[in-house]
Amino acid sequence: MILRNNYYLTTLAIITMGISVLSCKNKAKKTAVTEKEKTVYPSDVIPFMDEFKILCGDGKSFNDLANVEHKDFFYVENENNTNWVVYKAPNSGVTSKTSSNTRTELGQKEEWKPDTGGKLTGTLKVKHVSTSGDARVAASYSVVIGQIHGTEGHENEPLKIFYKKFPGHTKGSVFWNYEINTKGDNSKRWDYSTAVWGYDMSIVGDTPNTYPTEPEDGIELGEEFSYEINVYKGIMYLTFKSGGHETKQFTKSLIQTDFGTSSDIPEQIVTLYAAIGRDGVERDSAYAGELQNFKQGAYNQTNGKDPEENIVWHTGSETYNGDIKKQYENGCYTEVWFKEATVGSGTPPQH
Image (spheres, rainbow, N blue to C red):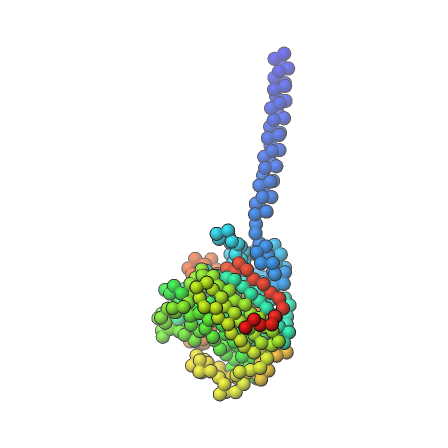
């Protein structure tokens, strides 16, 4: 009887152990599934990702953005129960063949012409801009958060929306630039800058380490704002909104130039670009008939190039020889968060 009882007890123990192991395996499997289900991708936050591709700050690109993330460059953060798509780029990484600047930025797959038009919106906050640079250089401490980019001809940019904040300042500036579609030699191209909140691009420091007075109506890091780019029948309509700030609206033709002769060149350009000799004029029809697309994300404007070679665009930032980890550790990067964005056709203006 004792032997029989021991046999039953042993058998019961083996069965119990098997059930326990199976239960642990199922629990581990469920945990793994649960963890997988917890992953939130940028395409879950902003549905238009299927219409874009992306180039990241380490040179990695993705043409299909469904359920894609790239840690340390393109991913989702949750803050106060709100999901944000994060775009992060070092001062020096791997960039496109036509640029000196590193980006983690979406590029629209579809192309359109100004007379056809299109619309891009974004609600965002800039979390960080480079703290390294040269205060005399207009591009220092700045990031482009949205743009229209030409894809033929000179491939210039009829619109770049910037955020810029000088070190030590609490408030930064939002401004937008129009780059001329140069008549003839494109080496003479320049950007005309218009302030939204704070300064335009031309306000710079007197020395590499001295800064202008902090803008009174600027935007802080982490402060939410939005933009709408609406191109309709060749005219670009821009709207900028932020709580506690005046809504700003602007209109600019993309099919008829304002800068067709030397006498049309603004004083801002004469002053800012004098050192690098850029004094071109624009073709009469501006960007009419040329293909464009939208871009959105973090296009870092701070680079390690020598300011003495180009006092407008070469910012002389610290880049740690391209070591991305060291740049992130030492403030030599930019980071932009978007919680909403849309893309579509241009619409009749509301103003």
